[in-house]
Length: 264
Image (tube, rainbow, N blue to C red; front, side, top):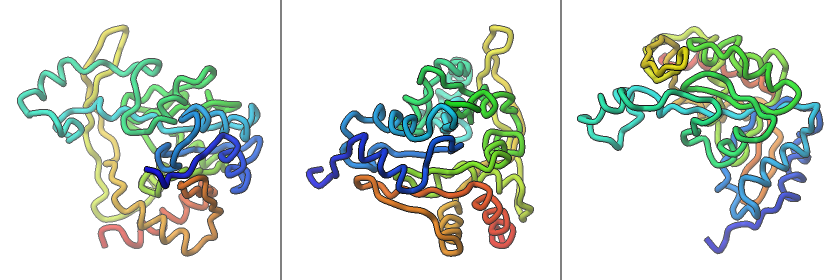
């Protein structure tokens, strides 16, 4: 613990600028607070630094997924005994975009979703939050089935030619690669039925919907291959490796990689 780096808001602002994040950017952010070392001020100063650098004319998006709101049979309640599963189905609270916490998205994303002026999408399992000029655009009409497709938040990021910022995390956290999942044609591509609790007309309901099976096991391999072909802007903030990339370039590369390599 003693060898952790001491990180301030100034360090984060300087690091963001060093990798090319600037005022007016549209950027999807994935972050691990603990990866930095000791951040003086915690998640608050990370959020403040992002807001300061991107500014009101830009837009910041973060995944705020709540996948615990899924059927225990999917493995999301692995720590609970099977005899509780039906009770979980009957009692897990319906998704509320203002109240429902994130699951393993990290302290920064959990704070970001509560930020005054932020918007959050209505997807009961795979929501995103956004702040800035295009926050409403990125969070509205997040289709239940089309979680990561052309009209989803990551699809909209592609349309806007936005950036992806990885703060102390690897490509397994890079949600944009799921858009390549949707676009690519590969053996074994399949759908899954997801069940979750939602609120309809003020009442809690347990519903099911069919969507593309979410995997991501090869995302780190995709990222490694991507960085072998393209020069990615990197720096270090404290102990955290920071990467910035063009999302269109990443998605186009990942689509081709998946078609050539997945399940072959």
